[in-house]
Length: 193
Ligand code: ZN
Image 1: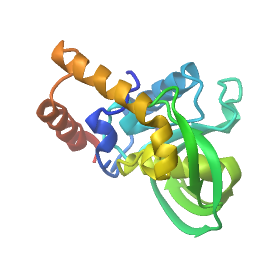
Image 2: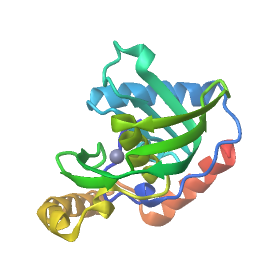
Image 3: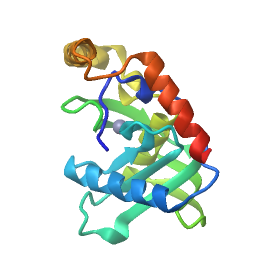
C-alpha cells in the first residue's frame, strides 16, 4: 500500500459506500494508520491509498503512541454546518503544498466504525477541519480546489511539477493508464460495496 499523489485519477474518483466490513478491510485500515504516521499526517482517506471506498482514518495527535485518538469513519454523512474559519491546510497526496482553506467551524457528523457502531456527534476546531478535508477526498475534491484564485496562483508552479512527474511516470510505465485505473477501481467496488 502506498499514498498516491496529485494528479492521480483515483483522487478524483467518487468513493462508494461500504456494505460490509471483514478481516481484510480491518487489515487495510491498520495499514492506512501506519502509512499516515509514516508520512506525519493526521488524516488519510481510502482513495489516497488507491481504494474506492467511503472510509477514512484520523488521529489528531498524529502519533501511534496516542492509540486512543485513532478513529475510523465509514460512510460518513455531514450535516448542520455552522460558522466559517480559514486555516492553512496541506495534504499527504500533495506533499509540500499548503494553502488557506475556508471551512465550516462546526459540523454534525454521522458515520460508522469498524465494529459497525454508529458515531453521531458535533465536531469543531481541528477535528471539524480534518473531517471536512477527508470527506472532500471521498467526493473526489482536493483542498487546492477550495483555494482562492490568488492562493491558487501561489501553488501553481508546485502543482505543475506534480503533473510533469506524473506524466513522466506514465511514460516509463510506472503508472497505469486511466482505463486500467478505472477498471481496477470498478473491480474493487464489487468486493465491498
Ligand atoms: Zn488530503
